[in-house]
Image (cartoon, rainbow, N blue to C red; front, side):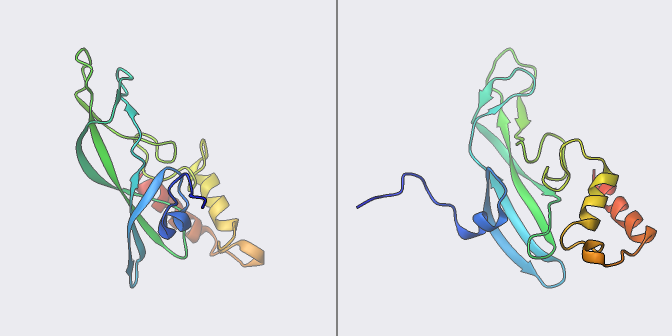
Length: 157
């Protein structure tokens, strides 16, 4: 009998499809859409000051992260680890984990706002992409929708 050699992710993690993240819980809010709580994969993180790799956890903190729509509006929260730096010569004693999908100091995923993409480019892509108000000939709300989305994207930056 053949056995799979790797663990298969649960259905919520597969549907959410954010690499190196695992969905812990999903709660449906009536008006706000889905609230998704995630954690990053338990891989060693390098200290930003000395590059010493660490897995020893100091604490966790919750960070709200903006992400693409997944079957409607999504409020993503990341249970982010704070890690100890065990290098005795390092000036930093602890640091927060970061991933390629949510780099240091970022408040949105890279799939929402591509690397190097300006706010205006992200708005244009969202407005004219599938499901956006400008898709398939639908008229956008004009300048007011553009300004509203621009304000939302830059507010929590």
